Length: 93
Image 1: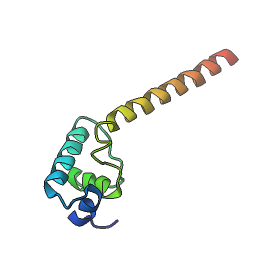
Image 2: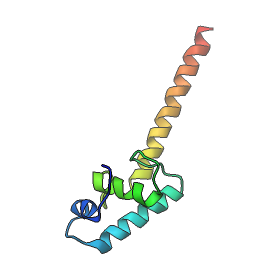
Image 3: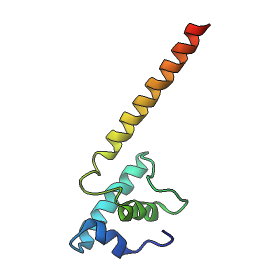
């Protein structure tokens, strides 16, 4: 997706409600500023990246509050996996 348009995002938010779109985008930008990584790839400004996430359907009102929790769960699983690998390596020595 080369360019993001408001219409792309409104299609995901529904009801052509620009006010709701602004609120969703602001909440997601706040999450980014608190350290939450972007779901979309690119090197644009944070609002453009946020709108790409919304247009792609990755960020919705239904999952906006769950995204940080999912990230923490994934990180915990990765830490556990690394600990198992290190433990297995120590057992082999």
